[in-house]
Structures are given as structure tokens and as C-alpha cells.
Image (tube, rainbow, N blue to C red):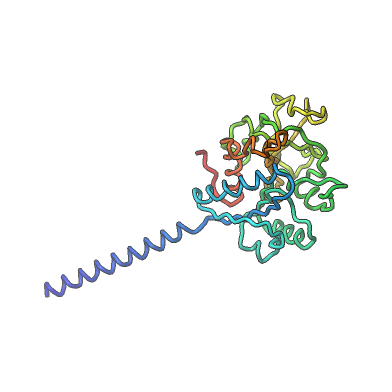
Length: 285
């Protein structure tokens, strides 16, 4: 009888250990599953400063994905901007340009209206008629972004002091003021302060002026209000005007003179925004 009980205990212990191992394996496998999936679209053509940013982003985001447990894919095939492809991702990034084909635009609009999330950088908001990027997409430029057409920019790329709205979930842990990486800052057609759907998350502080070095006087800003990061409260989106690294054009070396993600605070702002878009809690660390 005692032998029988001992055997039963051994069998029971073995089963418990086996079940525990299976549970631990399943828990470990689940923890390896990405919390959300990101797809970045880019063109990587013509402007060396934009290409530099794209290359930098496609190295930095995978490192953050490994650290914060999300997945990051990138593609320069804009034909992937369709409902079936987008259904596999929770966040879409535009690293430099925007879709131009009508079916791609329709797919993106539907994705956003159905609850998708988006982050766009720098040139992804550019539109100017006439140019290679005409303002011929009213929903995107006037309703979604709210900015309308591009008007002008500073030159050369310069660091700016940014004022941050800490009342927003994605920027609550960013200092109320910080110095950015050098960037070619844009001015827009529409005054975003007058749009009730737009919440401005970062703008250029007056301590930055004069901003830019020219040589044209119009490329040096001495005053004015310039939003550089904002969200549209009707959508889960954040636009960031960052995305133009400084390049050594003058000596024809085309070397990077600045890197966007080399700025620790700016990188945290981008990461926190992405985590928020992915439905994650934004940590103060």
C-alpha cells in the first residue's frame, strides 16, 4: 500500500512538473509575441538629407523594437498600401513621402478612419502646387494633417528650442523645453491653432530666433509661431516635422553632419509617441 502511494505521489509530482514546464514555455512564447506591429513606408530618393534620415530610422527603429517588444518592418513598395497588407499592422509610418496613387490613398484613408495609427515625418506632409508633390489630396493635407500646403523653410538645418505640451499622453514625460537635433523646419499655409481638431504638441520657442543661417534672408526666421509636432484628435496620429539631417553639400562629401536620433530627448519623444500609437503605456523612464 505504501509503495502504491509513493508511486502515485511520484506520478503526480511528475505531472505537475510537466504541466508547469508547459505553462512556462507558453508564457515565454507569449512574452515573445510583439505587443504591436509597425510598418514604415519610404521612398528614399533624390534628397540626400531625407535619404540619410530614412537609413538612420531603419536602423534605430529595429533596435527599439527589440528593446520594447514590438515588430518593425519597412518597405519602399507603395503598392503595399492596400487593405489586406495594412490589416497586419497596428501602426503605419511615413518616413519621407506619401502615397500618390488614388487606390493607395483610399486604402490609407480607410485604414485611419477604421482606427489605424500613423506617424509621419518631415517631408511626408509636404505639398506645393505646382511641384512634384502637388496639393491634390484634400483629406490628407487639409483634414487629416490640417496644415495645407508647405510655404517655406529655414536653411541651413538648425537646432531649435522646442516648447512641449506635457498634457498629452505621448509627451507627458518629455521636458517642457529642450533643444532639438538640427532640422530643416517647415512653415505651413494653415494656422493650426485655429483648428479645433488639432492639438499642437511641440512648437519652436522664441529663444530659438534667429533660426537658420541663410544665405537667403527668407531662410532665417526672426519671429513667428511654428508648430512642429501635432496630433489630430479625430484620428490616432502624430506628425513630426523632424526628418532632415544636415549634410555636407558644400564640400561635396555628402557626409552626415547631424543625426536625428543622436538627440536623446528627441528620440524619447519619437519613441513615446510610437508606443502611445501602439496602445502601450508611456513610461517616464
